Image (cartoon, rainbow, N blue to C red):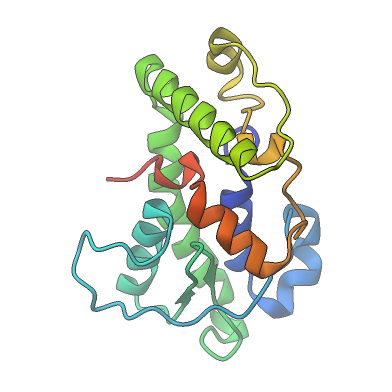
Length: 190
């Protein structure tokens, strides 16, 4: 994981937690699961969006290609359960899941200054969208501060709006995410 995560990344990573071990991993989680996600048909054409997050779509495909039965929700949450991942196989599942996420994380870690500037522009557009929906969003940092802090303490319009820890009801969350996509959901994608 790099610096701070966006709300989207925290929700996605949270949903990949195996329920029997969730208690021990609470310190690592930032959000609680909102709903039980519907399983996505993994036979969809490559390149076809399965969720609002291209990165989660890529990780979902990677995990299922490794043979794991997981679910993908509309907002990019990836979830495994004790029914699909027996306790004795959890360590292998976690290693495979981490390896799939590492591809995305590595690409984010290696974003160029121009890519980070584009990310800043995307975050500003998301901020504008959120304020258009009536949410108060704290002022963004300067472009230079965003560049300087990107790998340490990344500013996000969603976090600046105070979204986190299930702060919105599910239906409102869905409206917000679909109206104002989180830029980080597309970072690190092949």
